[in-house]
Image 1: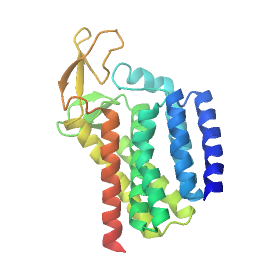
Image 2: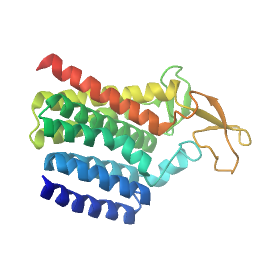
Image 3: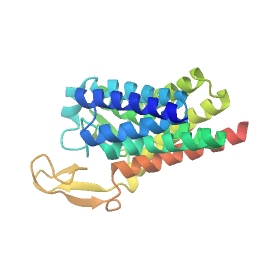
Length: 263
């Protein structure tokens, strides 16, 4: 196990360094990614492969039509471009921790939770990246009001389809590396459920802010114009990273419940 952890750390550091150099990760994001990657590979090479697969596909989608998406989400989304440590941990920590504990204890329930949380991260990423790239607007999930693509709590038909594909990519990759078909399928279902929870949380409890100078909504503390934004709704401090943690937990729980029901 020690030699595998050392090999995993070397691989994780190399990949994180390349991602930092390529601009996909910030310095803090690269450090966090190396830590998460080391833990995943220490569990097994299969878990390391799944994490790499998620990172490669999500990074490729982030770069796809990047200028178009940047223009459409300008001043709206809380973070853009390089992923920082909080984003990396929000999307990967539960996966790596559940996977490691599940493998070392022999608990398929814990492993299924980990798979479901990663499937949720993939579903959410696919929905956001494809939705904002294809459509300039989306609709709030509860009110149906038309808003700019990338707005938390908003959905579109193409984004919803992309979320299913994203969850399916993790489920398919899990099958490839030898996970039981029922666990992989349950993780895919949990990923879709987790992505839906992410949208619902974004529309209800996620902190919403407003720029008084531009009279426009934003998730940022400081708007692009340099003005400090004011909270206009949601729970103070419950921002996008917190939503990702919560939705990943929902995806993991739904996955293990689905697996327990059909096994």
